[in-house]
Image (cartoon, rainbow, N blue to C red; front, top):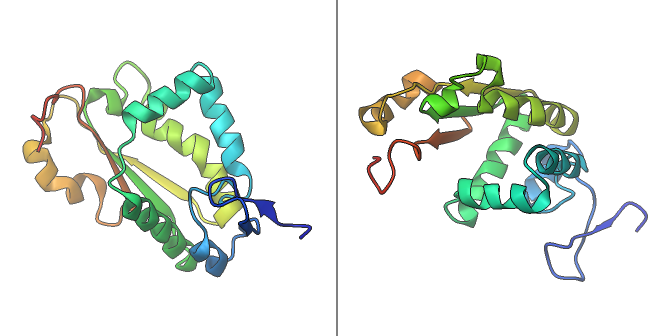
Length: 176
């Protein structure tokens, strides 16, 4: 069991091998398993904690800002990652939203989507052998309706994950 690692996410008797870049191994992996990205996740997680005030504050930010629509959503994203590896194509993250996502007050390359790209890009390349492509299609002052009807034109039809930040201007259910 020299190269096996205990999985603290599952039952205490579950052991998993570290995930390599092989598609068949990645297909069987759980993205909630800390060994999923071959140890890169710990480095990314620590960088996130350092950037956002320590572990407790960073976890509070994540709890408020990330919404997942059930375990199927997480599994679907993991499957899209595996498909990108098998097809030897970039994994595409597309971002939409308002001026905060656009990065107003910063240089475009300093906007949140491109910070995500800098943080995750190297890990994607090293772990999966594919590039991470990020698109920032956000437009300041444009509401989700009718903007949401035109997502393909702003974000592309090949996005693996879409992030839409509408919280600043469309609170209390005003968004479509």
